Length: 474
Image (cartoon, rainbow, N blue to C red; front, top):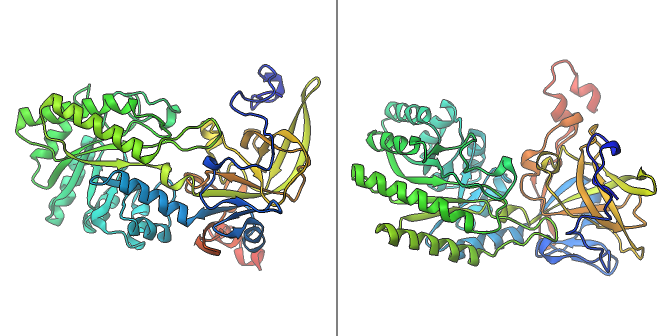
C-alpha cells in the first residue's frame, strides 16, 4: 500500500504495507483500551456499547453521523485533573467541546472554564458557570466581547496585545470597575507538535514576546492602569503534548520575567498560568501521561525555578485541553461504499466511504491528524485488511482515518466508530457541501441525552434568503 499525495497516485510515496506504528491485529474485533472511553465494551454479538447503550440503538434512534460522549468518563477525567492538581486552578477548554449541559458537568466537577469568544462566553454563562471561574482568551477580542466579559464579572481576561490592554482599560473606566487580567506571553519554546498548534514560538499570532521586550512593556502598562488588576502571566506552548520537558524553558522564562517586573517596579505577580494542551491517544503509538505524573513534574519544575530565583511560588493554573473532552467521545458513521483502488501495479488500497467526513472532523485534513476506527455493529470472522476511511465530500483530502486494519468483509451498512473524537470535532465542524452538523449525544448508565441536537435542513436553508425553506422541508 502507499501513502498517497492528495493529487493522486502519480505523486505516491514508496510502497509500504502500513505505517510503522500500525501493527496487524491478531483479532480485528479487539479494542485497545487506551483509545476508548472507560465504559466502551464489545458484546458477544460484536456490538459496541458505551454508557450501557448499544451503538446500534443510538444509530437507529438518532441517525449517523453522530458524536457520542461518555458522561461518566468525561466526569472522571475532569475529577482526575482536579485531584492531581489540587491547589491549582484547572481550566477546561471550552473551545474543544462546548454545550450548556456539558458546562454543568464542568462546574459540578469543580473546574474553571476557558472561553475564546463572546459566543462561547454566552454558552458558559447560560450553562451556569460562575463568571468568577471563567477565563476569556483570544488574540483579537472585539469591544463587544470585552464589554460582555466586564459586565458579567468574568474572573480573568487574558490580554494578548498592547491594543487590547488600552481597549479593555477604556471599557473598565466607562463601567467604573476593574478587570482582572493576565498577560499572555510567548516564551520562545518550540513544542513538538504540529506547526498550527505550537503556540509559544516567536513567529505566530498569540501573545507578547519575552525576548523582544513586549511582554515586559505589557505588564508595566497593566500594572500602571488603575482600571486593570494585573494578576499574572499566561504561557501556552502548544497542544497534543506528551512530555513536560517543553514546559521547563517556558517556566524559567516566565518566572524570570515575573522577577524582573518585581525588581524594577515592586509589583509582585501572584499568579502564573502554565497553559497545558496535554496529549491523548488517537492511535496505538500515542502514549499520554497521567494527570498525577503531569502534576508532579510541573510542580517540581516550578518549585525548582522559584528556589533558584529566590521568589515565592505563585498560585498556579493549568489547562489540560483535549485531555478531558477528547477520550470520552466517539464518532459514529455508516458505511456507504467500499472500493478497491489499484494505486500502482499490484498494489491496492481499500477505500471505505462513510456518511460524514471533513465537515464533522477537519483535523485529519487540517493537521494531518491520525485516528483509529473499528466496525461497531457486529463481530467479524474475516481477517484484517488495511483500509482508509474517507468521507463523502468533494475533496480528495477528505480522509477521516488514513490507515486502519478493518475486517476484510467490511461492507455497506456497517457502522464504524472512531474513538477520541470528543475534542475539536463538533467545535470545528462546518457545512461544507451543505452538510448538516451531527448531534452531540451524551450517554450514561443506559440513558441517552442530547447536548446539541442534529442540525436540520430547515436550519441551514433559513440562512439563505433566496430559498423558501418551508418549500423544501415539508
